[in-house]
Image 1 (cartoon, rainbow, N blue to C red):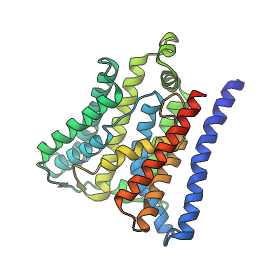
Image 2: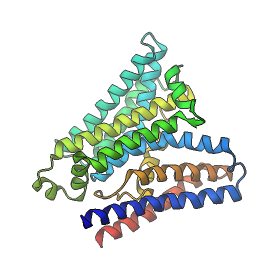
Image 3: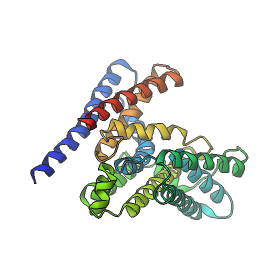
Image 4: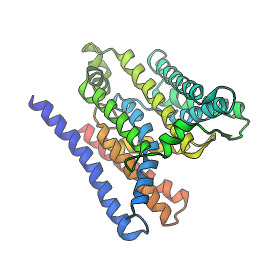
Length: 315
C-alpha cells in the first residue's frame, strides 16, 4: 500500500509541476504581452489547446507502454479530408464522421499489427504509415483542400456550454475516460507494466499484444476525433493541417511528466503540457517571432526534458 501511495505522489508531483510552469508562463504573458488578460483570449487558447490535447491523450497511452506514434499528423488530415469529401458529396455529415473514425481506427490497427506481430520498431512503423497516408491523401485530393459544412462538428468546435468552449469540454471528457482506464483499470496496469519492461510484463501474464493493439487503435482514433473537430473549426480540410500535432503531441506528453521511455506518467500532466505549449506558441507569436524560432525554442525545451527524464530513469 505504501508503494502505491508513493507512486501516486510521484505522478501527482509531475502533473503539478506541469501546471506550475503553466501558471508562471501565463503570468509572464499577462505582464509582458498584450491581450492575454482578456476572457475572450483565454477562451480561444483553451479552445485551440483542445485540438492538441485530444491528440496528446492518445499519444500518452502509447508512450506510457514504451511506444510512439508518428502517424498522428497523417491521421488528423485523413479524418478531416475523408469527412469533408463524404459530407460535401451525397454521403452527408453523419456518414462522413463514421467513415473518418473507421479509417482512423483502421490505421491504428495497422500500426499495432506492424509493431506487435511483425516486430517493427514503433518509430519506424508509424513513420512509414504516416508517410503512406500523406501520399495516399495527395493522390486522393490532387493536393486541393476540401470544404464542408457539418453542423455537428461546427457546434462542437465553436459552440459553448455555459461560456466554456465545447471543444474544451470534449477534451476534458475524453481525458477523464482515458484517465480512468489508464490509472484505475486492469488495462491501465497492463500498459504501465509493458512500459516498465516487456520481459517482466510477459512473465507476469500481461497480454502484450492486446495491450499494444488497444493503445495504438485508441491513439489513432483520438487523432481522428481531433481531425473532425479541426474540420468543424476551420470548415476546410488540407493535407498539412495535422503536421503541427506530430511534434507537439509528443512534447505535451513529455512536458506533462510522462517518461518517453515508458512505464511512468499521468494524463493530468499531459493536459498541463498541452495548455503550456499552446500558451507558449501564442506568446511567441505575439512577439512576432518567426515559425523557425518557435520551433527551435520548443525543440530545445523537449531535448532538455528528455535528458532530465532519461537521467531519472537510469537512477
